Length: 314
Image (cartoon, rainbow, N blue to C red; front, side, top):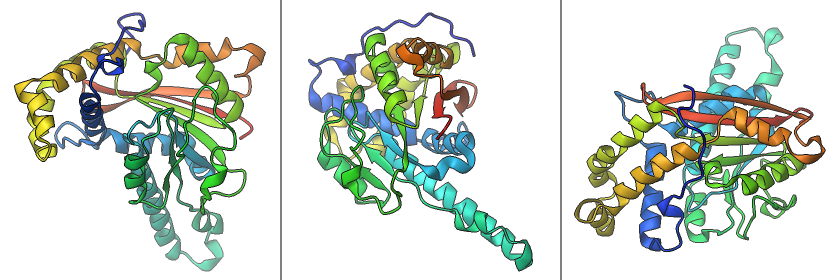
């Protein structure tokens, strides 16, 4: 769908320093739930699973050539679910390929397809690291890691992954930067700096948003308030503060819906990100391929906007 309004960088409540930290943390928990929630009648899968499939579809056989680094991970967000889903898909595809080939004679077995499978690593980073939350998430998977020092996405060190000792990451492994529900937070000057640093120091990037500047997104966000009220008891029943600020003092759903509308207005299209890249000094984007599109994460009303750039010589 085409944008119905021009992009405007309005303020989001959850970005404001005066919002209490305990409210901000629970709003972020609500956003993570929206990434991982699967409503069987309305969604073929969770949005997190859709991201994994989209990465696999766009990158194809190159999917295992990269390490995926979330540059705005917050408390972890959806990235642990991306890792689990993508590696599960890779393992399933490898098993299916191996089973199919086992039915053929040895002379016709394609060794490249049976031996090329390698799990991919995901790395959490942020300008304000959440060490305890990241450590808890990393304990659940050998392919989820984190950088404990502050990482500025506009000035990321090229050696930031060297100390992690990733067993499945060969020397010189290429990096795809992830911006999950993040790139719309950056005003244009900061977005340009981050994009410029990305093009200079990485081999790819993926901007992933659950919304866009479309009528469908507006309808989805309007319905998000009732959805949060409906599902909260099933996911946050052990957190009385979350329940209080959802039902008695409904700050959490108000922030989620208000910020959802603002996020939609802030979200850039693929064309706008490409134009921003092309305007950088020194032909920074000349050796890059840009692809973008939308996928339905919720029937009729829920569009995931994705923008993926890959360095051509990578």
